[in-house]
Image (tube, rainbow, N blue to C red; front, side, top):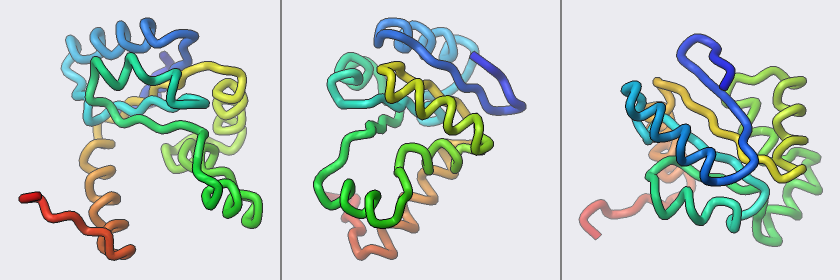
Amino acid sequence: MQKHGHKMIGTFDVQAEVIHEIGELKAQGYKEQDMYVIALNGQQLQMVQGQTDVQLNTDEGDFMDKFKSFISGEDPTKDALIQMGLSDAEAEQYYQQIQNGKLVLYVDSEYGMNYRNFEAAAAKLTGKEQDENA
């Protein structure tokens, strides 16, 4: 894994490697809420999802997501990589690795709090706030 200040990113071939790395990072004091795994499809994340509570993202999407991406010329996965603080060149490099079947593990010790704040703001803007008591 490459370290950039409080951020780390790495690529893996199989889920078992990602799960092992997550365990190692947890032993070092990192929290699962600060970890994010990106893959080409959901099948690549079934084991990770079953054994961890890290944030997951796939390059899959429904028809509307793909249509919006086509119209806007933006790719949500590549955009997510840029939002993680990667340069355009780094985002492209990791995006291509995802397209080739690799799994990307991103860790940011400040990510969990920022992600929750973003999700809450997005839910409020879209009117999709959920009742926490539900």
